[in-house]
Length: 251
Length: 254
Image (cartoon, rainbow over all chains, first blue to last red; front, side, top):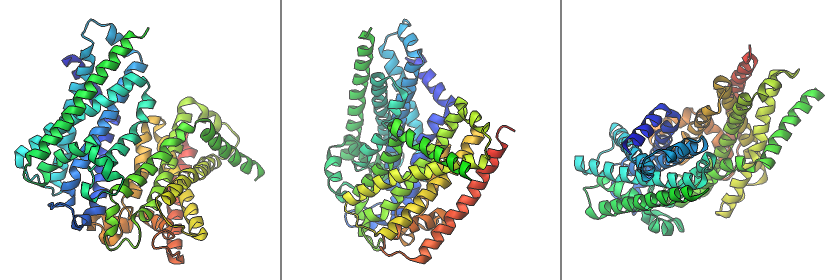
């Protein structure tokens, strides 16, 4: 498992064209959103925050992690397309290691992504109200959620077996993110976005990531975020293993 | 002259064929701006309650979405050119007894034509979300600017494609236009923006184009002052990027 995780990490570092967009696109949107909507913190119902950048950091992290999930899916689909995956299956290793190895690498990459945005935020004037403990919680929730999003990408790749098709889900990742409270407070969302956001696990993940940044740590929000991230990760890992086994049964 | 027109119309037909035969290829360029529009209006709609928007928030961001569609279309032209280079089709095109600037014009004009597809789709989505009719004159100006902007982005994307000669440069083609339209009054008027963003937007020529497209929707009155500034900004960008792309085209293979 660790060998496969190491291989996935080396591949990611050798192909920056897959890695860089995960950081660049959310950073650009973070800058534009912060610059454009900074006055919205004055709207009635907006929680008290140090600045709009602080509020938007969780959205940028979630967005980056979702893009990371798409990237995992593309990488796995490419391995299926070029035949490497078949050689991997033929090798004398536990098959679940293929899933867990890839997800272990995703966990490490997600840690880097979260750290990048925390540092970026601090450079541009954001403050982590929860202190070092709060920052560690953000890293933990983010890394677990990133692993879960990687599981989504992997499940899709094992099912679709086509990199273009997996890439096609990119816009839908944004749909799911927009229909959550990642960018704006739940109370200020308009129908039907507010209704969908209330049931969207991304809302809880984003709010869990956000709470230690914008306020002293609230156990409720953090635990909800952690539970949502763990739930997505457990479900998507199970689905990946299920699709892998389904693929092995095929002639 | 007749031969030139025939070549240009061949490029247009090729672009249309691509839409009809590979509809999946046009979907991201249409779908992504629509998702942005619906998402932004649903999520940030309350921002329209702030003084300064002079109207509905969805109407305010609809022109941004339309220009975003033009950006994706222009970038896709560069990606297609890179694909043609990789597959060797472009080399055969270079052998044709025609001026290279005409080949570039063919690519750029096909991007302009294709840009009407996402713009029209976005417009219909906007109407469905309650955006008011801007008037036929305002719409005509908006379409001219959108088609022109798609051509400008196509010049930029072609420049990148001719430089790197691979589809792997696609993110570079997309990100240029993306940055250009994002750092404008895309989400909020100058008065409501952070000072750093307002400063960038003031000197960003794309902002003039965006204001030109937007004027019929928000504030709802078309003025010659806004229109000529938009047209001049478009012309300057077209001359600079078009000139560089023609230069790069002429140097290709030498």
